[in-house]
Each structure stands twice: as C-alpha cells, then as structure tokens.
Length: 426
Image (tube, rainbow, N blue to C red; front, side, top):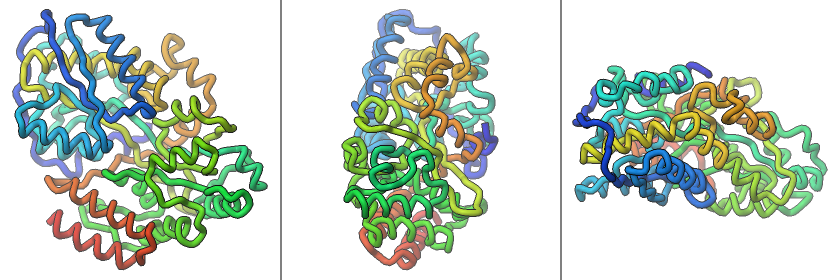
C-alpha cells in the first residue's frame, strides 16, 4: 500500500493525551456497551447488525447496543461532545480520519495501547493489520490511541445503459476530468438526464480534497499555510461550478438526492465512496459499472482515503475492556469479512483479501471492486484541520462550496474563505 497513506498523524501532532486505562481482566459478568456509528440502512447498517450478532455469539457476556448517528462523522462528533459534557459518553465510537487529531487532543478517551500490558494477544492484534496501517491511530510519540476500521476511496460509478443511450461507449469511461465533463454534457443533451454527481457532505470535504490535490492544490500545504485561494484550488472549484451552472449536467441537490437519482437511472455518473458499492450492486436496476476516478491531464493523482478509526470513550473500566474486545473482533479477519461483504469498504486486516476462508472469493467474483483496489497506489491521508476549531474550518469550506455551486464567483468566494480560515486557525 502506498506509504503516504500511513503518515496521517506526524506533521500536526506535538502533544499526546493519555487517559486512564483499564487494569482488569476481560469481563466475565454481563457488560453492556454502546457503539456509535454512521452506518444507515443504505450505508452499512446490515454489516453493523451482523457484526454485533456474531460477536455476541462469541462473547455472550458482552451486550453491544449500536446507535446510528445522523450527519456523518461531523454529526457523530457533535453528539459525542454533547454526551461527554453530560457525563454519559458511549463506550466506543467511529471517528472519521479527518477528525483523528481532534479526538486525540481534545476528547477524553482510553488509548488502545493501554491494553498492551494486560492482553497477551495485543501484539498479534496490532500486527494483524495490513503492515503499517495501524499507524493511522498513533500520535507523533507512537501512542496507539485508536485503530483503523473502515478504509475507502472514491470510485466512478456509471450507468452503462445511459452511456449507450447518449451515444457513449460504456467500455471507455472518462479518464480525465475534461473527458468526464464532455460525457456528462452529452448525457444531459441527448437523454435529458443529469450527467454526473460528485459526493458532498454537510460535515467534511473528503471528495473535494481528491479533486483539488490531484490538480496540484492543497487546503493546507506542508508548512501549514492555507492554500484555499491558490490557482489550482480555484481551477478545481471553477470546474465543479461549470458542471452545475454552465452545462447544467450536475444537479445542485443533497448527496442523498444524488444517490436516489443515480439508483433511479436519472444520473449517468456518480463519483462516490467505494463504501457504497454493496448497496449500489443490490439496488441498481441498470448495468452498473465502475472505473477509477478521473485525473487532471498531465498531473499526478492524489486520492484521499476515507473511513474511520475506533476509539474507546467509556468511563467504566469494565466497559473499556469490553469495548476493546469488540474492537478486536471488528478488525479481525472474520469481522472484516462481515464488514466488507455488506459495505464495499476495503479491508484493513492483513491477508484477508487473499484468504479463501474469508474474502478471496468475494474479490475474485466482483470485478467492480477492481476500480477501488487500483487506486490505493495513489492514496494520500484524509487531511484534518488541526486544533480545536478544525470542525469550524471544515464548515467554512462547505459554505464556500455551496455558494460556488449556487453561482457565486469562485475566486472572491475562496479569498473570503481563506481569510475566515486564517482567523480560525491562527
């Protein structure tokens, strides 16, 4: 796997936060824990239910109550902070990779590494990840605060039937963003349906990062300087605006509405997380195909890796240990098999994709997954905004994107966003 994927933490973290760890043996009496996640009925809930049910077969003394949180990772984080303020946090939760630094610095938790001395299987557990991947959950001092659970990349999903209706060759999906624009306009002009959708969120800027970094831009550069109004970023957002405002081939709606349009055959192409693949395969009534995300002509692709890590937030020692046991299961070969089969996320467990007892057959018989796997060599970390105002910084960019897709002038909008970010992050 691309080495850059494994360096999510080091550049920004200088202070480590430690919380008290459990000092007890694994729970022997009944323990109930809450697990907070972002997996809705169309985005992995089945995998959560199946994982919980299987774990409770293996550990009947641990009852897991799972709670879906609205608003993706940003919504979960807000709810988590509210629960903490009330003194009632869940035992464990998913934290998006873009929020790792905030969680490590600002949220009281029990680092996974605290269990290294009391669990004789700890080394085997950490070494069970794809080599180096567990480093995603470490800080600059090497403390294992969390472990990776979900791993995704954006994929170009497309409707081969709409391609044919528009006079496009479904065996030749667009390779560059300019080719995508032409194909989207052709679909719009010849079929009356929208040509393309790009995944958006009300709480993060995951997909825009791929669009921008592949064009040579950065939200934050290597020195921590804000790059939002630089030419490469302006160009990427201007391209997005042209799809919506000039060509009218991209619908300016919510992401849920884009997804509904795609599954209804009203959207020709959709750049969205690979984690939606299982749901799309189940629900699509047309010939569904996948391809790698387009790139900018003559430029190196940089694909932001999405997903989440698992943190322990429980205050009670027995709950902390029970949560640790559940995390070990979720990231095991068996747990990852359940997770991948019912979502489309990529596995984090070493060897599971090639193991005939687990996921080998799945990857062999599902050619649609090849587009996701092919992009890992171009993967880069999902960029977090540092500091306690990181979530506010995300919202500044979200508001800028919404204004631009609504027709606001691109460069002035991004200059204003830059000034707001400077005030927040200084």
